[in-house]
Image (cartoon, rainbow, N blue to C red; front, side, top):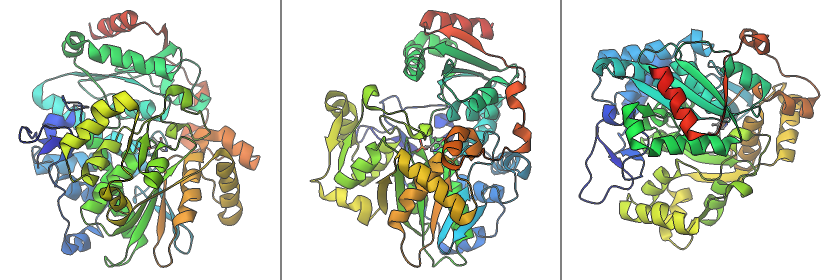
Length: 474
Ligand SMILES: *Cc1c(COP(=O)(O)O)cnc(C)c1O
């Protein structure tokens, strides 16, 4: 399998293999990596995969995309990653039936209680393996407002050859999220609380990455959601969800996905392109409805930070959807010149593009199965209440957005699987607002607010950050 950039100049594409893009973020031309084609899964393979344990299913799917890691090693990495011990059950991503035709798929029973663990845990093991093969080191430098940073730290803690420097806005994460991150005392984990807001943290990451000499000298890398390996790992749970919701491969299933950067649902798109019988891929957004607007109108309009709202489903508070370019690349028949124009110069100049008049736009729904909807704070609260009253189940605010939007797109005879992207305990104050009670706390998180913490508070000063990294690497 080879990989190309969504912006590769036609005829000049230099395809790369998996391990060459594993540690990379954006392609050098500013595009995102995608496989040159989507491997097709036969119905015999689907039959065979139906009964596999999750780790072996992951191996089967990954081996279609990774041909530069020996099979035995790849299988070992999958088995080491997807264990009942780490993910809380043998099923790893168990399906919960709410009522006839409506399911929740649990993706949030990993170490940080959000779906990002599904991919990040694998990434930790892949990084360690690949760095050891070449005797190299990597310093991950990132910015987080909550879920991504902690998932990265829990995946990389104690891993050889990797350090994590994670900035977050000082005092702005929930007490639970702060406790989760700052209580990690591993030598290779560096928490940096920045006096400022999330955008200041992101600006620091950009400034350091733009200093090419520093970036190369200190082997600076990222683990953001555009990393292909993360997306690939997420493809697996669409298969696992499909198998649990059906008894034969002639049935079709729809998925509804609480979305922000379009990483999760883009993995669903890849699964569907591989031939998994998915009917609809429903994109659920919160008040930051960049994606819902596109699927309804054909207009993609990124927001400025002033137009990006802080909501009660904060992990979906995005101003632009960083993985969206991948889908548009497919939608436009993989016309990389057009993608370069739309996402490069076009977006930088206008902050928007409009595909509504292009006949290909209609195919987003008719050929690719996409649908969308938006959920607001009031919807979220009502859905949390309703789900509790009807089914005795407490869902987190992001999953509530998914459930709300799923109701708009259900079809008779086609199961709707809503992806549960976090556990409610991470967002307790919204649950209290909706239900007047605290959600249950898994035993291993009882009392984490009282654990010793390690965090360095710093100003948003690029020179100071570089000096900090330099000292840590000495
Ligand atoms: C990251 C996240 C999302 C959004 O996922 P994308 O891949 O960015 O679309 C939704 N819910 C939760 C809880 C998250 O952490």
